[in-house]
Image (cartoon, rainbow, N blue to C red; front, side, top):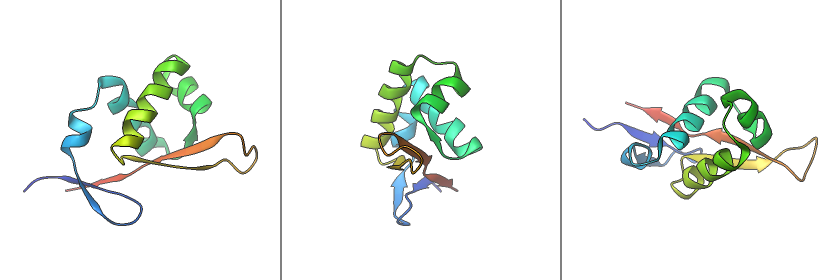
Length: 88
């Protein structure tokens, strides 16, 4: 049985999208999955990765539908990112 990732809409996504991602994107996804929703700045602080690396990782994850992004209500210029859940 192959593990899949589910988006917020409930669609199952192949896990290979995450397996093919660079290590920084896997790490960012793991942190989002473990810690919950965060902004790009919060992710950079939590992971100790450069902001540019976090931005590239989020772009990679977003293109693969492995994260969702929403407007950060306290500051509409920012976005909050959430990891899609991995189901067995």
